[in-house]
Length: 274
Image (cartoon, rainbow, N blue to C red; front, side):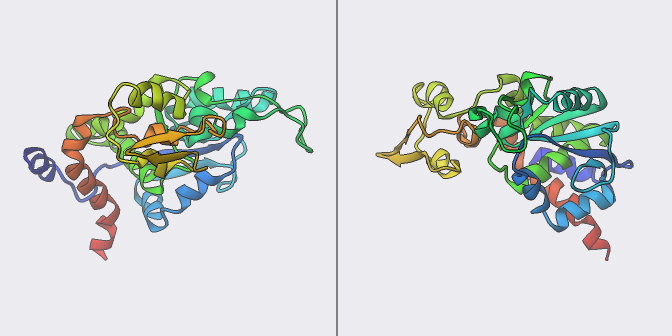
């Protein structure tokens, strides 16, 4: 409650003065992550109105070359036989202050890891890697696709981290820390990792969220514990990212009420003025 009161005392009519430059970089993926971005509806429009300028996005803006960006949302894995894709991800890193791996393909490779080439239009495209195998990534947003709410929250928190006052930057840093830790952990995230890091360590609490988050229903929940068919796992990392014991962070849990109020206030500020 003390933190909440402190944050309330630092609220402004508009949290920060300057809009950040936001970009969406689309590599090898199904566009499901972009659909999740759009599923924020008026919340996304609010972000574009008051908090971010969309300066790059192949499906949304008429810009041919990757510009300077404050926040880059990268969707899809990198085809290493495609020189342009390799150059694009490196250029994205060089021109961005914060790089976010948006979704499971960018974070862990996902289903593209199983590609053997032979596609009708580009048969030579046969090997794909998550972006973290080629560049340093700041934040992971796992999921196939990730939830619209998490994408929205990361954009708002990145905005506060870059342009907010000292209290807002500190709070945003604590919110983003678990997702930054995921990025530091590496580019593998599947049921095997959940077994090794959580279940076999006796940390599983039997909540079932891993089974609920699995997009291909590989994981079942039997006798209070998760079971999985490893032969069918697509290595999307959704279960690992959703598990509350995989990268538990007490700072976020204890301050989530204040974080939620800041996000709600940022998105509703314009409606209150009308």
